[in-house]
Image (cartoon, rainbow over all chains, first blue to last red; front, side, top):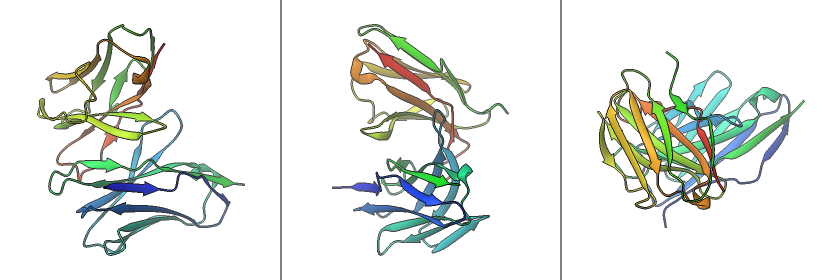
Length: 113
Length: 114
C-alpha cells in the first residue's frame, strides 16, 4: 500500500541541539517534497520544498535532504530553540503529475530550555 | 493581504443539523483546497478547485458533503446532515498556481457535532 510515514512519537530535545525529523514514503515517485510547520490551533505554514533532482536544501537554520533511493527525507533544525516547538508535516505529490500534495500525519517537536 | 480567511472559527452543532463552512482565498490565487484534520487520519484533502471549477472531489467522504466556489473570492463546504464523526478541524488553503507552489492555509474551523 502507499504510505507516508512520520514518527508519531514526540521528539524531545535540549535547546541548542540539532533536531532531526524523518519522513518515509513507500510506492511513490514524487517529483517534490514539502515540509510544513503547524502550531496548536493554527493552519500549517510552508517551510521548504525540495525537488526530486535535489539532494539538499537549506534555509537559515533549516536543512532538508531528499533520498529518492531510500524514499526518505530528513528535516534538520540546527541550534534549536524552544520557539521551534511545533508539529512538522511532510507532504509530497502521490499522483505523479497532478502536483497535489498529500500530507503525513506529522511529528511533534518539543525543545526544552 | 490578510491571508486565507475562514469562518466560523468554531462551530458546535447537533447531529442532523446542516453546517456551512466558509473560506475566502488570497486574492489572485487560482487554486483552492479544502482539508480535514483529525488525530486519527491526519490532514486529508477533500476537494480542490482551479479557477472556481471543482477538479477533484474524490476525497469527499460521502454525499452529505458538498462544496461550491461561486466566484474567485468565496467558497463553502457544507455538511448536511452532520454526524458526530464529522467532528474535526477543517482547513481551507489556496495557491497561486500548480501545487508545487506554497500552500497558504487558513486558521481552520473546529467543528464539533454532538
